[in-house]
Length: 80
Image 1 (spheres, one colour):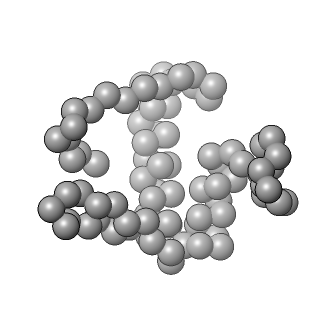
Image 2 (image 1 turned 45 degrees about the vertical axis):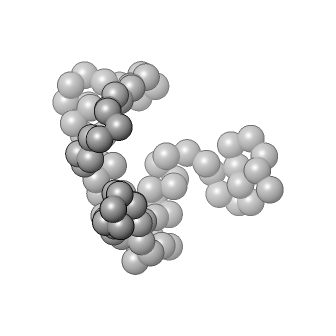
């Protein structure tokens, strides 16, 4: 049951979700279908590490916690 910013006993924030991905579900996988049957796979631990690198890059650009950030990509953009 989803109630506000909590689900069961777990806080629904990016930081708490990334911590949980690293500790409880580190070996579980995220699978992304790229089209034409091509599938990219990454462990939850790898996804959390990529999110940390992205956050570090945004901080280096002067983006602070609470700032809004948008992405823009075309329908054929398969960049990571």
